[in-house]
Amino acid sequence: MEHLIAMTRQGVTPETSRPPRVVEGDPIHTTWNIEERQAQPAQALPGEGQTPHGADKGMLYAGLWHTTPGAWTVNYEEWEYIRILEGVSVLIDEQGVETRLQAGDSHIIRPGFKGIWRCIEPTLKDYVILA
Image (cartoon, rainbow, N blue to C red):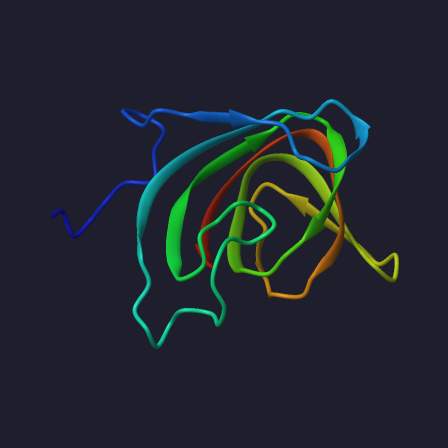
């Protein structure tokens, strides 16, 4: 097992999908999942099954994700760290508060966040998800 892994798309087979709850446009998501492993018991969030984003609970994921413009509803049951590498998106919470996400920004999205992800310009992020 390597103990230092580069966050790069090279050599990683991408997965392409469309979000299930689109509210605008026809966004296409591409994911390069670089790390996928069982989370340590002390790290895992409670519950079984899958999150609304299709992540198996009790798992840790890390990789890169790209989206094309559009908007879709989000309902986070998982914890996610994101860093925007390219593009512009806006996260809009249930109260209508907008957070602009652009290259260089880093955020933590906690379980319980609900709202809309709107991609303004094609957006690339790296992520670490604890499901």
